[in-house]
Length: 618
Image (cartoon, rainbow, N blue to C red):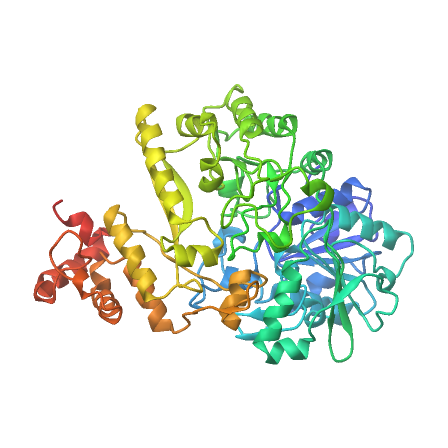
């Protein structure tokens, strides 16, 4: 079937005088089911709609936006697979030098706040067309939100972008419902009933059940009201028990309908069976983002882990949706037929690889609990822990001809794994599905910080590492754990950072990369960061915002780097932990009297990338 038309010439070659939809995307055109734009456009195509794909148009000019003429039904606009601001800036707000979703990684092919810029351009050129926003950038900004880059509360992206509607979450069903309504002659202004949609109105008298959020003016000036609004939103993420939310503005209301229902297995199988090309368009030389997903398969959506810093709850929800074994195996078979396939499936998973079923039986009837998490602070008594079906999928995939190895790289929840009384999956994971190292995300070691993060206590992670080592020994494997760790998360102070550094010293691990907490829209942690309040408990939370103090926390995680010596010493002095300066095994850095010797190592560090602890005799 080939790629969708990307310019007027290709549209005319198909015999189309006018498209039904123009999909404008901040990413290069990659027709792969790991890219949301591909799923939405293929779904529309499968239902008979004519869709053209306008990738990374020059927003400073009109020509590319005008080339197709006005679409019959409307414009669909997305920043792409990643938030444009996260894509462009590091947590320190420094401009990145690579865009993995652009040809050859070139930066600058999309604007900051791409969804808003594209939408305003379209509104100026086609003032009467329907404009529908989607994708992660719009989804997480659907209501008023704290914006880290502006350091202020911004209104719903619907208003900023001058658009008609936001479709949030995973939009297969909602986009078809909307397309059918538009195709039936309804005006976009009258389509107010679609689940998973947000719209603007001047009158809410016709709404039935709904909750009124604090006004935009209130949350913009009052952090406690902001926290209150966030809590109301947080309690209405579930499609089965959420209510309509109304956010008042001076001259209008922004209305958020409840989320779309989770896809059934049949619906999800259908979505992933569409005729994706599974590659980037031939107009490009190379799109770096294809590397990890080209030979990977998505098996599930959603996550009931509910980490405070993750936006998945707000975007995909807590109810796990999964594909059938047959659907996954068929896709793996197709992958093996590619000429450049070397025998390795890079991943079979999703947001959390080993979440394959809803966490309890009642969720598909009444939804997830509003005031209780499935795993935190302790596993719910109703939690179902079962890896058997996911394991059968992995077994079926690795038994196929041409398959050398099937890896699991999309993330294992070690706490869920540890709650499984049957070790069969754990053993086979180690035996068959790890490429020398397993990446896990304990995030921290301080139980105080972990509790705020929504993570399990450190003792469980410690038990996991010991069991992992034991099972590797039994399997005669020499495979390592690579822990993901985070600095400066709300609740984390210098004493917690020192505790983490001491743990890293104990396990002889120096992270090559350190992730500072990044406040992105719609996460619980971002609400804490902005307000200094835990919105779920209304209690104050310590937040480190000073750039230098954040730098001290980062430096402690890489305490053995000679270039960090002065920062680490300063941090230990401030934390009243100079007992960790010295020559004993427990110390993080040598005494000042040895600084000359240490300084000599600094220049070497930049050349050979070895840490001080790596070069010491042990």
